Image 1: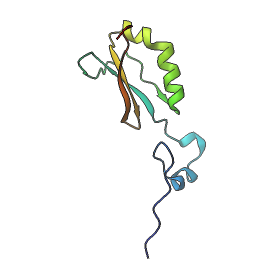
Image 2: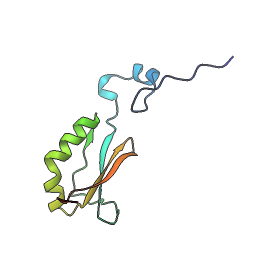
Image 3: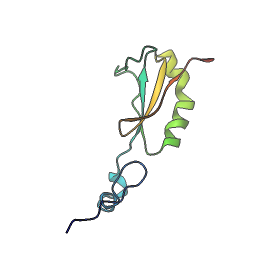
Length: 96
């Protein structure tokens, strides 16, 4: 007899896995990939590396920080959920 497939929730966590974790242990999965216009991923330590517990939190952060990122040499961003692209690239340049 085989076990039923684990239940998955949006974001990819097994419900059983969540039951074994405390709220403080849940991995923040939403991140912004910072890129040049040609798609090169920027990895400078001087650039912010934030993680968010929700897509909405990530989108609010980019809305508040896009000018700072643009001034630091970031041309575009892509939103990742647990490392998987969700959308982007999205230009930080106005009118593009």
